[in-house]
Length: 257
Image 1: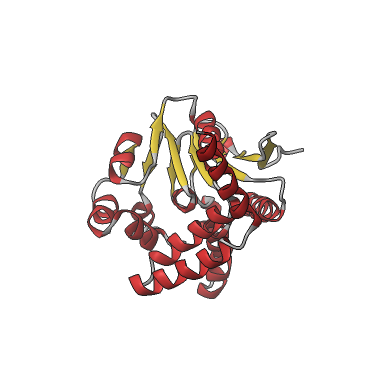
Image 2 (image 1 turned 60 degrees about the vertical axis):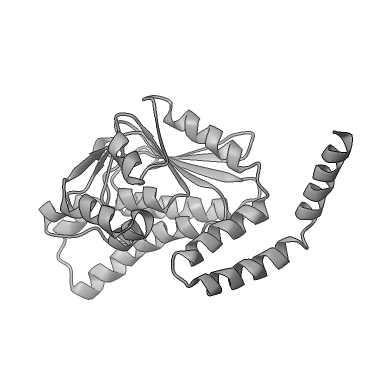
């Protein structure tokens, strides 16, 4: 019996650790792993006991992208687009998941694995991790939002440097380019992600969800449209019990101080 391609660990704080578990293939996303990860993220979105999600990889790599076997099949263009859409939907689903999602990049990451990481709210990397951009050697380009997401995240000039310059960035370079939130010592990246998740969970769950969606809107819209969306979100948040209780606690602290 083969090992489960995705490991699940839920801690007492409600932080779910999802470990891509195909170390022999550098955790490349084949059909089985893609399906398992999609299902796990959907379950996490629905489960009130799951409050935050961490993605990491088993072994020496975070994720080597799509399994090379899919490029060796005989595809019609329409069949390949349909197959590719499933992977695109998985990556986009991370951005739409209204809970903290943190990438704990334990090693090399490339291809669609990079898109998994970039779709997360926070990206922490081990010092020895590498971000590899070698799609051009296969005669393809970063897809599943790879080019567009990169430009939105770091700007056109830096995106050009990444995609048209060298083929690989060290963790330190990835942090300098704005692709990584922080770099931590080897062997500590999951622990650092757990600590970051607990920090995120100090925020109101409703406010976190609203801020996450508003940030996505802000990347694609005008200032006036963004402010309109903020106003609607704020008017909903002030009506929540969570907001009223937080204001009461803050007032009590000021009074006692």
